[in-house]
Length: 179
Image (cartoon, rainbow, N blue to C red; front, side):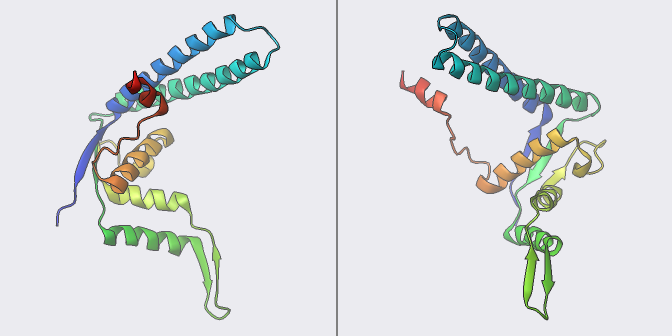
């Protein structure tokens, strides 16, 4: 039986991050506008300062992500990765590798010690799910961390829900749809 596949593109990721950054910058402007109307030293002003700080952190994180992805894109002849949905048996094989690397079993004392290693799980899942990648990428394990994390999110979402859009509307989107 052939498993479902999807293609994800680093350039689409950059567009998504740029859209997020635009939204964050709009929110920053809104906070600045509201802050001009609020007295210093009030709880509302402190709340606006906290909101501003959170937005600043988001802005910096997104700008760094965009920069890192753009550098990677410039070094690749293709920016597409093909992801395959794993079968039940393939998922169980990943879990077996995680168990093997995560736990120490003492048969004589009948004890098991250890904690499941999330990194091993993600790495094994990613290696088995990515079936096509740019020629310059020898292994998905060699990708820069932010790109590997983004690819992991795509693999996890696809293997959790298939290619079906589950909605996942944000609160802002829900509020906008009411008007």
